[in-house]
Image (tube, rainbow, N blue to C red; front, top):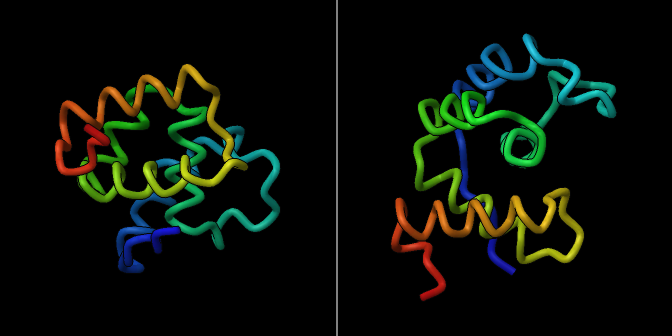
Amino acid sequence: MQKHPEFDYDARDRLYKALVEPKPYLFWGVGDKQGLSIQSIIETIIANGDFDDFKILIEILGMEKVAEVFRIKIQNPRHNFRNKTVNFFQLYFDKHVPKYSDQ
C-alpha cells in the first residue's frame, strides 16, 4: 500500500479554518476536530462535502495532492466513499490529473 503524501502544518491549519471550523456538522463523529489529519479532512470533504468544499481543498492543497490521497484511500477496502462517489472522482481525477489514471 502506498504512503500518504507529506503536508505542512500551514496547509492543515488553513483547511481547518476554511472547512472544519465553519462546517462542524461534516465532522460530527470527531471529538478533537483540531487534531484531524489532512487525509481525514480530504476523505470527509470528498465523501460528505459539496463541490464548493472540494474546490477549497484544491485551492489549498492542489489537485495532485488531493488526487493522490483519494487514490490511496480507495485502495483500502474500508473507506467512507459511496460507490457513485468513487466512480465520479476516479473519472474526475483521470481527466484532470492523468498521472494518477489507472489507464
